[in-house]
Amino acid sequence: MTTRIRTRFAPSPTGYLHIGGVRTALFSWLYARRHGGDFILRIEDTDRERSTDESIRIILEGMDWLGLDHDEGPFYQSQRFDRYQDIINELLDKDRAYHCYCSKEELEAMRNEAMAKGHKPRYNGKCRPGVNNPPAGVQPVIRFKNPLDGGVVIDDLIQGKVSYQNTELDDLIIARSDGTPTYNLTVVVDDMDMQISHVIRGDDHLNNTPRQINIFEALDSESPRYAHVPLILGEDGKRLSKRHGAVNVLDFRIKGYLPEALLNYLVRLGWSSGDQEIFSLEEMIRLFDIKDVNKSAASVNPEKLLWLNQHYLKQADDARLANLLESMLKADGINLAAGPDLKALVAIQKERTRTLREMADQSHCFYEDFKEFDVDAAKKHLRPVVAEPLKALRDKLDNINEWQAEQLHQCIIDITDEFAIKLGKLAQPLRVAVTGGGVSPSIDATLELLGRERTLARLDKALTFIQARSS
Image 1 (tube, rainbow, N blue to C red):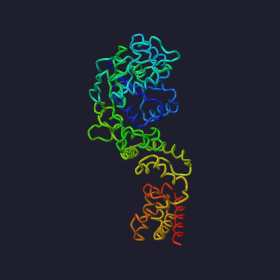
Image 2: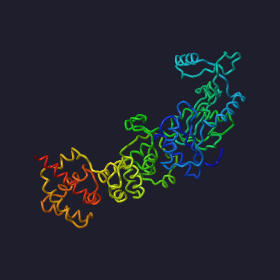
Image 3: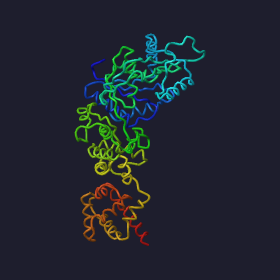
Image 4: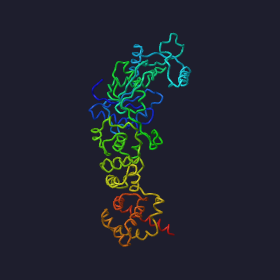
């Protein structure tokens, strides 16, 4: 086994890449980066019927978006069938594998018999001694000859020592009747050929590990070190699923999350370094150790992710955010020529929005006129009592020389003094009047970015609305 640290991420492209897989990839990537090793990307696409090009695209694009770069790969198992066949033949030649001709009915009978005796359902080794007269027309599977005595001790870097007796393990299938290799065979061959030193994966694979270690031994190869990460649970304590938001990782990009926020969130699901919550990528690499991952499962907390994303939005470069916001607004069909400079908009929006999606939604009003006022906001704030102050403010704004936040703010203050009302009693109706809703950046900055013509036209619209309401 190589002394150089070599980890791998080996997703199956039979569905979307969700946060459980991404966290496994992150832990593997961080472990390799911390130790100056190699991170290998492998696509386990031997399930020809369920593997899709779209799933592969999502995996590659998701890893690229998150910045989890690989040193080797991506390798595709579907391109390595000749190698797997060579290994299967080697195991047959060594008498460490055999052909099994048992029918589905025979296997079901074995299963029922074992369960009736209170044992785990398993293959009873009927074909293990060899079949002298194979049934005609039956394509056999190939089974691995698991040792009949002794045991396997896994010195897991997270779970500690886990022991299995070989009598608990049956002779698993390593090649199907159509000749295609199975997961437990291909993963061993790949990890052996790619000299993987550490396998970091979900603890749902723990029961596969003793079987894989026995195949390594049959091939006279040393197995990697293993670290089985507890699964991520939903807020209800149940295994993460679609109803918990276990969606395609690229959906987080669509929803306006920054990759650094998602990585920071995922690294804290089951790992910690003191009480620290915010980690730069450099800090993650320097501090992360797989041995510090908790044995118990972590639960998702969407509010924590939003909090982290808001932090990273505030810290992000305005030019970068402007580019991201531009793409999102164009996808919304917004004409950006009809509004303020995006960098100027981002500078004030990022202080109060939690996601780029929120920022985009709240930025529409700067580029296109809204058709209607938000019903609840208008009902609460565009009332007859505010008509006179709003009209006075509209006239005052129409007459100022420089359309800048400082002068606009002074106009608002002057009107509140004139009518002896608190700032909020004017600012919030003004916000609804010019944006259509109750949320925006500071009102003076909002007016500055909207511009004189758009602001006055919307104040006229609001005053007409209030007049219609009062009559």
